[in-house]
Image 1 (spheres, rainbow, N blue to C red):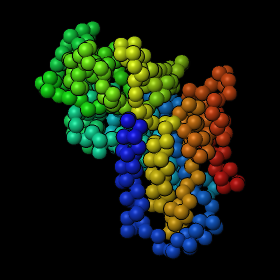
Image 2: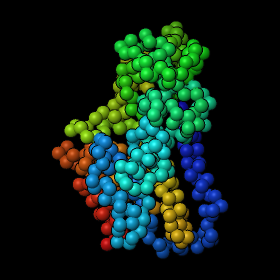
Image 3: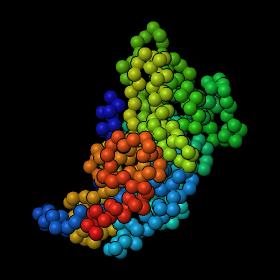
Image 4: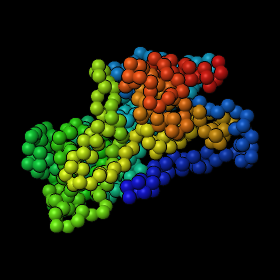
Length: 387
């Protein structure tokens, strides 16, 4: 049921980009046969997609190779040509416009919000299903600045509640901590006996695993999605579980700590096991982010639009006809490289993040294995341009 719902929703995820591609300003000026001949004669346009953590940054620190790599794409290359690029991260927690400003400041290049795909960006595809229904949002900053609820509302979700709201409403639901006084002004007060949650969206990594696990399981085991209730033991569990969506599935991720950290994928495994042990049933869920195809569909169409807007008329027509030749640069074989391989992109695996040589060969073979992002960009350009 969740998979079929996602399939319907994923169409709307790309609708905006597809509409832009079919707008009058982008209509082909040649007959389709002409476009076909043109695309045969032109080199496939080059584009890049970058992971952020472990590739461009180590925790809060920008890697020096990252700035040099992006300057190459900004035109400091043998052809003096700008090469389009986007950022695809399983991170998030703030609006894409805020992340774009951060990246522009840190990397010292112009970055617009339509170059940024975060793990939860593709959750916009769920608005047709849940835009006007009560949803429980988990993870991300629960208070300003960059409050996750505000980001979800900007996507089109009109009725968003957080674990903080439920904890403030029922402190005994998680008695091991209390809502801080500074958080109280941002709590949404409701009579939750009258709220029926339609879905749970794990928007970003949980800040409080214990509390959030408890509240998620409470909703999944509730009677008709009402917090503080339990399905009557005399009645069979409903066939349809309350849907739960995770913005990404990374088990591990790298920052400036010496050892890799647990990601949202570990959080999902914990919830699945608790749900299994308390209900005897397997939990159904949908996972977004890398390496899942819906994210790469979104990214590929985004890159096509960048190529069309940046190119001359003939190259733009070729970009429409054949699409870009994309290189994914990442540090995680299970998300970055697997997603690229499955989608048909080229890939560069770097040694500055999750992947370490001493752990053995990568589970998913990249096109190239290099020390850092600068080497990845240089070698990819040399291969594509046959320098």
